[in-house]
Image 1: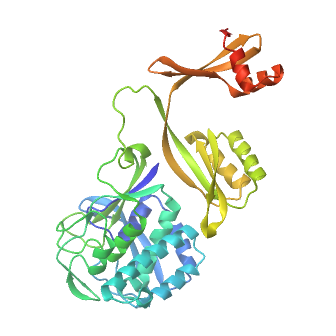
Image 2: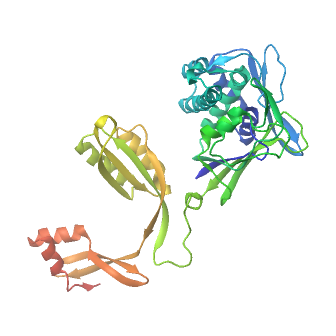
Image 3: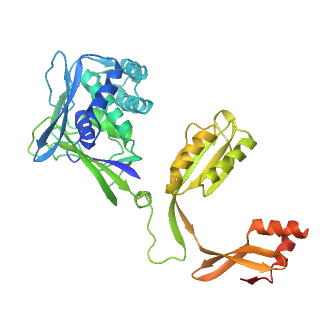
Length: 411
């Protein structure tokens, strides 16, 4: 499972996240091209190598025309006010990728809700101050584009440094964290006092709030790549954001899962369940789909009747897959069913050791499957296909066919 981890030991801001994504490998030119689809002028974004506290990384800087002064935040907030409706319309009507559009709207929407709560007004009445400035729009949409390009399976974060001291913003001079920031980090692990200045801005907090699937403290993982985003201020401690791209075992990282200790009388394997809700395929078409999925390598396929939204009857198509056949099954689902999207859930299958042997008798040959528990035979039976064949050949029932094969001998 590909995981993107936010290590916010020195906080987080929009431009730090943008720089860290580029440091992780996102092509700056692709970012610029996608941001250009917003259709707004008067900006450019530059990336250059820099260091903070001896740590090297990428510094992302949004430059506006005409130039404006930089404030004390890493997000370079200043400038014009924009309403939530203005920003929403700008993003909705742009041709950027749908995944990036959805995340950018989520980030801005969370900030709008936090500001509405601070000011005690309806969300649609919110007029952004710092976050409405053009440079912050570029930061947030740029981050959304970068995450959409990266497409991690999940996003996690550790403890978030909020900073200390005071911050001067549109609300006046206030203690850190700013009111909106405090609302946005609700439910996430945070700390204060590591720095005597604001380290997590509302933009940074909103990025985490809209993106993090789980806050974690310790994990087993294989590090794939690390990126550092450099903050604008030079402090006595490294002012950087670290992004870690990891490969994780979904069963080691799943909350509440405990690895079995010692030898168990069963075997285990890590598989994936693919589920799609379908309400516009006939029974015949679903039967054909099942055949095609087995041909593509499915270990099991189940069709479960369900009631979908608007009270329409539908079917949950559930496919059990090994990691090796995932791609072929994904393709088969999209090509052979009417679904436009599905869920993938990592599962762990426990199963008993089994043995298949050929048995012979007056009925001919048949395959007998035996399962073992703690090394001893637990139960066995003749495969259905062979029982059915013998029953048809002898003109008897399935039960009679089984009785006929009770005295068989193995080859």
